[in-house]
Length: 379
Image (cartoon, rainbow, N blue to C red; front, top):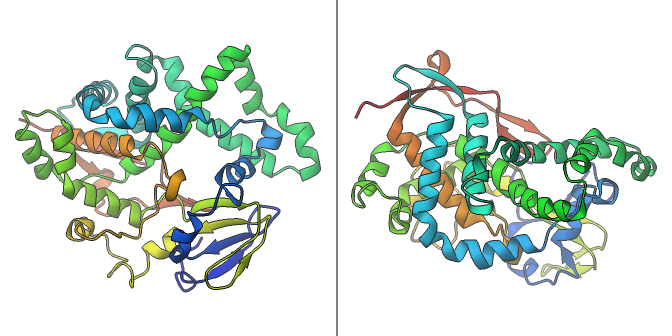
């Protein structure tokens, strides 16, 4: 894990599962890195290598996805706010129905279903987004892909082209979508859910505070999640940013494969064939960037809101930054606000500390087995 920030301003190499070196580059170089063409720095090639696509035949990325989100979904978010809010309310009531007594819920599993339904409402239809067949695919596809990826990485390189297609995860994928047209449609939809469901769930799982502030801004709009209401939730924005700073899902960001050598402004040459990344967590834990960085300060970014630089690269950087980040932010705020206004929440057994994250490789995620106690608020 990259928990040290002593090398954050330089360039250093680490050993990973990859056959080629991984070089970490200071975020100070991001402005010049983002100017390099895809023929020099390729996100697609880095993803292909990470997902072992030569062996698994998993097609990624699907070009239509970012174009659809940027061109159709994001410009329509203001108009769709009430529709998204309605689905958030309905899916939460289905998954976590009102309860007069303290009731256990596995928050990770509940949020996977909620986010799957809300995302499906936007990507598929109001009818199909509640289908158990769709939810099974939306939730489990990511796990099957990651399972196939790990299985391939554990094989000897020369065996991968021969044995990868016999993996249960990939056989199941073919059985579900036997004809080419179905495969193409499913590929696009599963690509969307791969990017949307688990990542949004991991962020929302981290959050449980801020009730009065949500109640106040909603009271000014008759309880409706209008675009203006979402934009006015500045303290909730700060809370979510601080959550991602202290508990990021991944230790690094801006993963790119170097296809052609290039020279940084400090004179260092980055050779072709390596993968570069930005040590995001090293920056977010640096007290020189964030004073008292070890402390969770929910209003940190609220106080810094007049500054243009927050040091975060959670959603990527440059032209390949996450295209769905605006939809995800609105969705998370609606889910969190609804939970705050409908439930009291506490840890099981009276614990007052946050449940520790699970850490493996470069990932750090909330424990998916963790349960919380919920009780409906008397209004």
